[in-house]
Length: 217
Image (cartoon, rainbow, N blue to C red):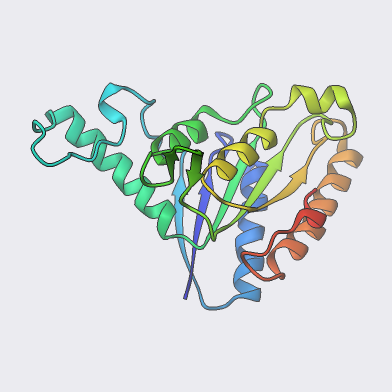
């Protein structure tokens, strides 16, 4: 059975386009892959605290001093999140563009799952990702247009960041369903959503764990 982790991070609730798209992505994936078990994480509701000394994802080595109560509590949060991520075969993430980057709620989650020895490791030849073999589908939403010009591409640190961090984890199959220009009039919004719906079909009805470079949009 395929395990799918559905993550939302928008703070806009029912007014969120990224939430609308992740729901469509999950529904389309399940239609194409009925034997899929879905778990859900709403980072706007259950936001892990920002990274601190207490929340570095400690794994107590033999003979080391015991963790403090605060470290134990934070380690339990980090462990639950990284274990959930590692167990998933498919991860669907809603990632709206906030101030040229991702929501801080999503960044807080990434900081918890970015654990040396779990999702990556350092070697004498450099870092190696340990979380490969997954398919990640990102619902990328933007009020303006960023993909159509060099200036726009230089300003966005949303898709570029997610490609980098998941690549660092060893994930090679990262697909984007993009809806941009959402704040540029009703006609532009309708066109963006129509394009995103086509991308959803392409990304969810193809085989998992196969790079989809030609489909990224």
